[in-house]
Amino acid sequence: MRLTLGDHDVPGSAAALGEQAERYPGPAGSWQPVHTVYVPADRFGRETVRAWGDAALGLLESHLPGDAELSRVFGPLPGGLAAEVRRRVARKLAAEPVEDLRVDFEDGYGVRPGAEEDAHADGAAEAVAAMRSSGTLPRRWGIRVKSFADGDPARALRTLDGFLTGVVERVGSLPEGFTVTFPKVLMEAYLGQFAGRLPLLEEGLGLATGTLRFEMQVEAPQTVMFLMRSPGLVPSLGGRLSAAHFGVFDYTAACGLPPDEQRLDHPVCDHAREVMRTALAGTGVELSDGSLAASPASDSTQDVHALWRAHAGMVRHSLRHGFYQGWDMHPSHLVSRYATVYAFHLANRDAYAERVQAWEARRDAGGGVMDEPATVKTLSTALHRATLALGD
Image 1 (cartoon, one colour):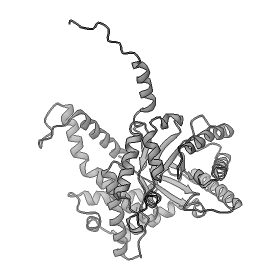
Image 2 (spheres, one colour):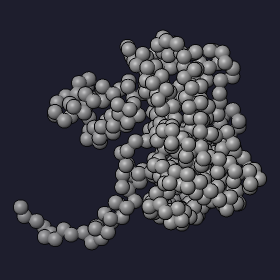
Image 3 (cartoon, one colour):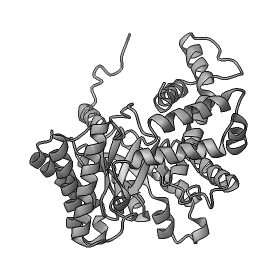
Image 4 (cartoon, one colour):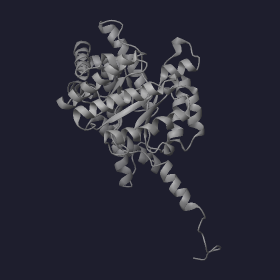
């Protein structure tokens, strides 16, 4: 063909493409837990995970004895789906009640004398080693340290150091799945300071470079602001940032909301999550929502069902907004978490698969649907996520 310009090389395009690959590698596509369970360090032991699973299973059997009850609590489900959801929840609670465990040395633990926190860090390491030996250590696990914003970064790092040293000494290596939660990141500089200590710990413990990664918590408007203005944040941390977790109660308090409005589905929380999504899109950093700070008011079925309905509503809100992970703070939450997640993925799985198959076969998906390539990619991603979440 005839050309007006013979040379179409674009100066700088290779460099821009390289920067794009560094900043936006895209999602890893690997398994992501549906929740993180936080347990204060002084209440954590080798039997914690099994105790949570047993408590949740007991609640399921006592307050959801059949499929009809499940539909009444979690809403009407398509034919036969309630039975499958209940079966899956019971199986999950018996086999793997907790997917991601965090031993908490921050808000759930409080400020303690140094020697007491040292002892709890060493005790947590001993419990983790025992869980690893017995096969009960969750697929993802770790600790939450104190914030640098509290003015004592040495305490946070000492706890991390003592815990990791205790685990490695007892196990002989660091079990897979470890991560550390870094809370209340009010200054961007704290991220670089924390990330800069991790290679030193790796070297001292004989761990491979890049083994230690962390997740930041978004708990204040200040954090949202620097996420918006720092497009190079993730690569500046050298691949150490694995996830961003939203902290609903600190965030709503920092925004001046009254106590009754401190809820995950408040519009100010929706705004913060959208900033997180936009700022971290394409970086491979996972996103997690927050929690419901409530437990059943009593052991009565009425109160247990009320808690499950409230929690399920929050989980559905997260799922609809593309946040597929959240925090669970009480054994009762495991029932509503898994029931809601399983129902969400099962309800549309077959329809999504049909649309993808129709696209691949270049035929009409039916129902007047005209899928774009981006939609088909989203459908495939949703199917992949469902397979991982359901364990199929």
